[in-house]
Image (cartoon, rainbow, N blue to C red; front, side, top):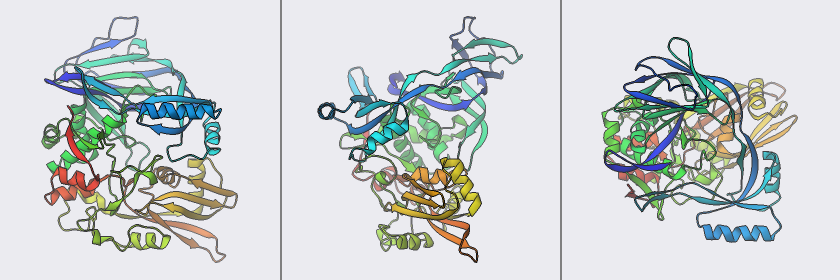
Length: 524
């Protein structure tokens, strides 16, 4: 990420992966453009509107070693002291600095850097995990990769006449003025229940190159504020109230600035365009209010204790927000606390916090008042989908679920005996789950892993209870999962925040409700 002056104002230039893992990418350019490439031939010449295709011609994946991260620091001096302590213990320790420091004309814009103490390298993830298991460590312990070999291969660019124009490893399409690059058959919602393909248009430049998986990658490079005009309406809808889109824009701006150089630190981009980072589906998602939301919050971020916040969000919290440490590795963060998502905490006081299986059942079987409860007369039509997620049910035949578990986890548990929650967060989301079978027990340690292993795509959330249907001999025949919410539940609840805006709350009130002890600050 770098800072450039754009329309008279400094702002970060971001790189977003908009297509990954493909062998062919079809595109056309609307408006004026030019092409840069690393081919030996002359640069590609073409006309606006012509359809081109980038094709993979041989490719191999990047190679990695693995490290066991034992400690994480913001202060570099503290990190160096810890490094000396680890070395004095005879451990093969190394200091890794990740993240970015951004300056513009001598002014510090952002410093999101972290300093990691890592042991290694190890040849496999399993070896690094074994090293971690031998030490008594906090929640910052994690296996992290490091690249030791770049991906190999090349691509060919085929013109509208079917002729190969060039061979190379990268091609950059630079748009001019109001030009856009249109990508055909782009994947949207990959690995989730709404997965599909559609035609998407992007402002800014588009680079085609090799990804670490040895497949084609398309990276859109543009000013962060132009990116955010699309994000606020890709994550939600351009029909949403202005104050909701402003809150969404501030959260998204904060998130990309604080995670740049971290989430995809070994990739040639800052964030991806899917749910792993934040949804970004180009200019076709935008409306007039989308741009106004950006303009009225330009450069504005959430700040806590002098640092930009990692302002995570999810679609439907289910009535109670979750704390970060029950979802991701890491220590508790002050502004990512659990809380009741309702005008009055009395709505869920009888259930909160959800500290037992009995309370989890009572909570999921109830439909208490909450900002994201869709059973209200003032629910806008564009939020009607929330009725499928505030409370939900998924049913499996036993053999069907056994096959899903085997395919998604790589473990054969045999005949399923029980799904046993071991730990839940305050919202009822399961953070540790034992899958008990006739051939052994598989323990899932994280919210997203639980959702991944128990579904062909992803479960809506890990806040669920389990009911069994048994035959006359007591063997399980079918399993019903009944749950609450869609997503991890940390930070802003998008449906709840929308209803706050519908009822007249401003974006500053919405953000203060979901992110405690934070303030708004304009940093560029």
